[in-house]
Length: 578
Ligand SMILES: Nc1ncnc2c1ncn2[C@@H]1O[C@H](COP(=O)(O)OP(=O)(O)OP(=O)(O)O)[C@@H](O)[C@H]1O
Image 1 (cartoon, helix red, strand yellow):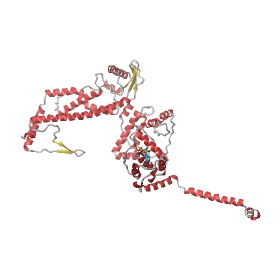
Image 2 (image 1 turned 135 degrees about the horizontal axis):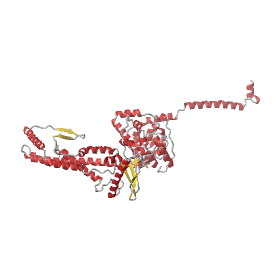
Image 3 (image 1 turned 180 degrees about the vertical axis):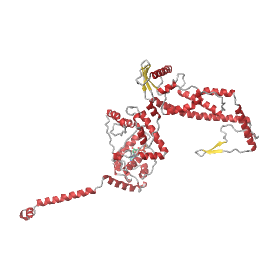
Image 4 (image 1 turned 180 degrees about the horizontal axis):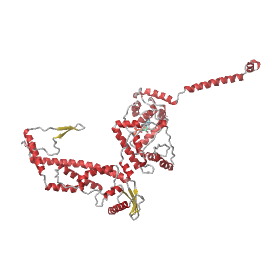
């Protein structure tokens, strides 16, 4: 009762202040309860977005090209539409109208339209939407790779993407240049050449990190270490391994990829940062799905033969080796080699940079190789086309020659043993050829003559008996018919046997025809060999160029006619030569 009396004001009326306070308390309690309920019911953002995505996707099948005039006629995300509007893109161009819908529906699209017709947006809009549908974020790594034929186009595409996709959560990077291993250099050079802010992602080995970070800091590039969310890491190694085991082509690609990467690191200039010997080779192979690391010859050799250094004084004298491991014999060998090369330099002048060395006798590398080709070809022709007397005297060298070529090819392909001062062999085959011919002329083999007569006699017999010779016919990949046997006449000389009308074989004409066929064959063979050798030469030259850059076992800088000249010397190759 006292409480009731206390809540009433004078005259028994309720106290308005007290009533208000009571109401306020009750109201705020109700409000907080409502808020709590709302919060419980509120969906996470990703879930809301997922629902929006599924609504968008349901509209994909309703896309009707004829009804499209604006970007907003496509079922696009709000983020993309906003980006398009902010960049003043509203109406679609024809190529955009024709392609965006199909791409959204997941179809492969190959589009062609004239320059300036809006192709860039035609593929960028579907790209943005594809990433949005997957709720891709910048921490998910690479989601889309756009490859452009020119740097300018890559830059232009990057700019449009940044503009139109700025409301999305994912990031975009521009990589310009050749090898992926050079990514950091390229980066550096290029929902920063332009003096703009930007971010570059560098993926470095622990051994590369320190030096690289130092260099970046020197260039005043702020460096941030990215911590990767372990939950986002997926081990795909086993999957890769099983893919590779099923697909030989894929496996070979992985092997080529492995070798290319190793080579590219090997060619990096900053050896103190990018040290190929520090690469975790087996782990790298595994990461590509290769259970066994492919053999990389130059790596093996490099590991076996550390670089040694020699010092040459200003008056061109070899002085004490810097590397204590170099023996006196090796110094002597180098001295002899060096003096020999110096005398060539003095006779022929300094070798201009980037050209093949020219010998003092005036025959260039290329000319000499051409000559060698001809000679080798002549010898091969002599061996294959002309009967070879069993008593032909030949040196061991000429017998082994083709094998030597193969070996050298193989080695140089790996970028080894390519001493750019190596002197080519002279006329090795020519000598043999002359010998061969001389012997053949002097001693025509009786057995071969007899054999020819026998064949003719046999042929005559066959013709008399009216035998039909079996034909062997094959088809090329293009479905072209090729008669393998009896051999078709290839030369242009007319087959006149039939014209005689008389039976049998006109031996003189047959001989003439055979000679013509022979000449024709030789010519064909010559062309083939020439093409083959040209290809080989190009390969060798490329290999030499590479090797001269990287395979110096001994590297010397010295003064010659007031110029600094570099000599790179392959110690092991020289040992063989001396
Ligand atoms: N829907 C659009 N509305 C207005 N302008 C557009 C539209 N689409 C593209 N453009 C503009 O048209 C110009 C040409 O577009 P874009 O560079 O994409 O053409 P392209 O076909 O890729 O040309 P190229 O073949 O030269 O690469 C650009 O300036 C671009 O901003």
